[in-house]
Image 1 (cartoon, rainbow, N blue to C red):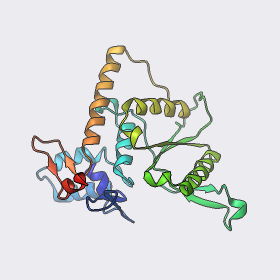
Image 2 (image 1 turned 135 degrees about the vertical axis):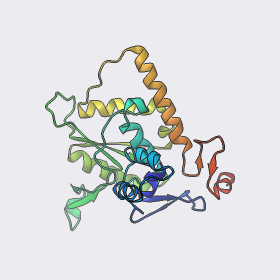
Image 3 (image 1 turned 60 degrees about the vertical axis):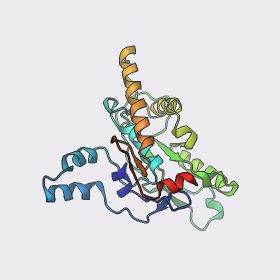
Image 4 (image 1 turned 180 degrees about the vertical axis):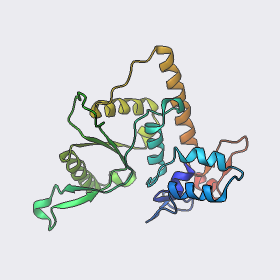
Length: 240
């Protein structure tokens, strides 16, 4: 989660109204950190950081996006769902829903998370070539923004991209997220192999553990120690 933040479009900031500030450009990237590790050679923590880089993501827009990405993409042995993500906050050129009234007939959309259907020929229930997953923050509740979000969903659908949205109440509900993963698999034609009940129970336990760890690492509180690390100002934010 910390590497995602350094390589993403946000910074956790307790003094900010929402607890986050946006960056125009990431501070670094996963590739740059990997190059740095190679250049500095063995150091305390370098092996652990190297392992983390294989799971970290560039261009995340928020901690919630990072959590969703890891739950989707990590292998089952680590508590994930083994669904490869092709992009986060990358630009897609789509036809404007209001193109007849606008000077330009196209615009750029940037789904939070994008997953593609496999290239192999296989039967699919629906014809979607991709699925987008977007986290809906508080500003999406604004009536004006709701209309913009409808345009956004329709423009992506017109490109055969199904856009799912999740809010904070969904992100903390593992049962809901498991249901959503099932729908994404269906939409992309990605079959889930049959698993024995005892193995499925073990996978569920790992998903629960990963989900709990991701929620705990909120950018302020790092609890993977007997004495949790807390960012300066985190207490005042919680009191507010």
